[in-house]
Length: 368
Image 1 (cartoon, rainbow, N blue to C red):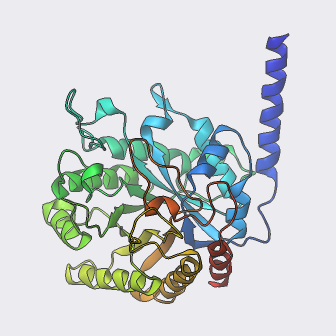
Image 2: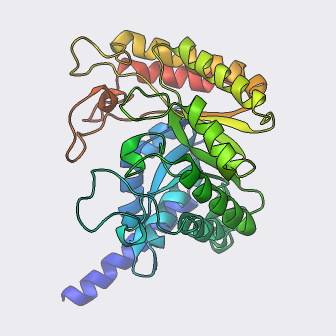
Image 3: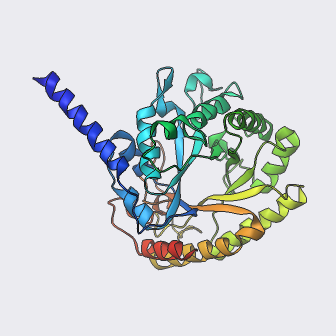
């Protein structure tokens, strides 16, 4: 009896998925593509089994884009990718008027430069600089402007993926082992630019999000981007992305404005900008309190400052969007420790809303 029962269950799940995808998007949401957030739990729920959950709340808060790591190691399925997980996720978001901004990251270890012994904790680039680009081209062929997914699912509202972010924070040592290399990243970026554009000429290729960090051996974006451009990266990106953490919302706008001036001086006036992370914790374990721990009340105030300021300056800055990190607080990373960055969520770990969520929602919905 287990065989027929399992078959009926699979058919029922397929029917539920089809019904969910055919349902209209949340009418009251009116998401704004300028406003984004990061919500790994949404990827998990929509990926494994179509469960609306937080995606409806995200849409209702006016969020029009979800920045999500497309973890290559996790998504690999033999010689191909787990299209079931990706289809559920991209389709579920599209039905709510939300577009995905993928971060192409974490290739299978056998494709990287990780040594067989003595590897450092963190992430190593691919041994073939073109590998990430090939991965992105495969995804663009399915979810890009003329992607096969949209042709195969005519009942799903079209929200093709056109912005592709290449890697994550390569100016921090943990994300580019064994040592930082603007030249190495430039090779990866250029290969991705060529391969993804060949599949979808409308694609926007964005640099990784670059934070201004005081972590030892890190490199500030103001130094990293010029070196990357001199090393052959000029002309290999449409957008520079900043992970723009600053003490206040107004300071975020100032940080982005200063970087716009730097790009102009570098001869990159036509290059766009994105803020692919910004945020503040309501609490954290650091004593004295970390610079980005605002407290429960000021968390919302700083979010409103940043969103309103960035929206107002978007044309002057050639700013294409701002992504808040994160929708929900995060667990301590494996092998890591508790710190302020795990407490920047608009919601607590148990899913209950912080005061900042209502401020975020009101602000996002006002940006018209």
